Length: 429
Image (cartoon, rainbow, N blue to C red):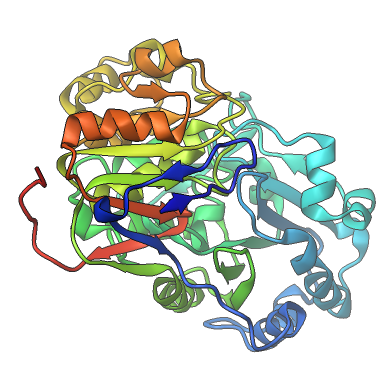
């Protein structure tokens, strides 16, 4: 079977038919209604709150927080109906501004802002990158009931109505994206970001993966509520980035409804654990910090002692903002915890990223990267294997897993929630 990848520059992969366990992808969805109709309906009948038009009445400073260029959320298509609602509530243009939820990603460029927000919005309203690493950019607004300090971008603290726009899809660190995640970690301070992520470090996968309610999400919800998130607009999208559902309203109630839609759309049945898993990370492929989402998925599908082949461009390398990855590499989990404890790794969010990769690459399987965005020496330096082509990577994988190894191909693995049906089987020989 010939396997093609969503990157024109990557050569196809030939997998012998007897070895192929299957090609798996999330289902495509043709929306019954246009995006604008879905959005207007969600805004007029939100979940858990009054309609946005009522919430915005009399507000003098509205802040709209949107996800960044690493997410394919069609923000430019979502904004016009939302702005109509604000205008109908009497909010003038001068009272509206935008903040980009970078988390700890690099700032978006001017051209990227225009593509993400649309030329008209970019010219009409102020749009700010979150300055997560700039001293004084965030303000302390208090502690959660669990004693976690909440530092949030000053523009959030100053606004009297905060709206979050994002996408809901499965993610390893907190079950699903969306909801309060637009603020935490989207536009919070380093301490708040670190403490939220560190909640995940010792939790078993089955307490988080595919679960809308879990300890990490509870932390996010509490932090975002404390920070002042008033209203969310979240979309659910298929592998072709077509919107199937829109939810709006309360950061918890609306989000949980969206998670149910997302779980139904992104769940993929896999008959058994595979000896070799081949995956791409599209559309999360700017850098390895994002491509790691696909590795999280493959870790649920590959058998212990198997091989994962990840095909991803990573044109901006491992991470533009976290050089510690190259400095320390993907160590064992205990070593990572010690590096964090001794402050050799300053940000716990980096430690959690390292642990996500290490759970797979150091404790479960061999990982082979097929990428032209990270130099081969750097790939090996962090503890992963490198191959120039998918075919070369498969040859390496067969040498490790055996000539009769069964191969599962995951298309768009970063967006997938795999459910392996069978009990763990013995490795193929």
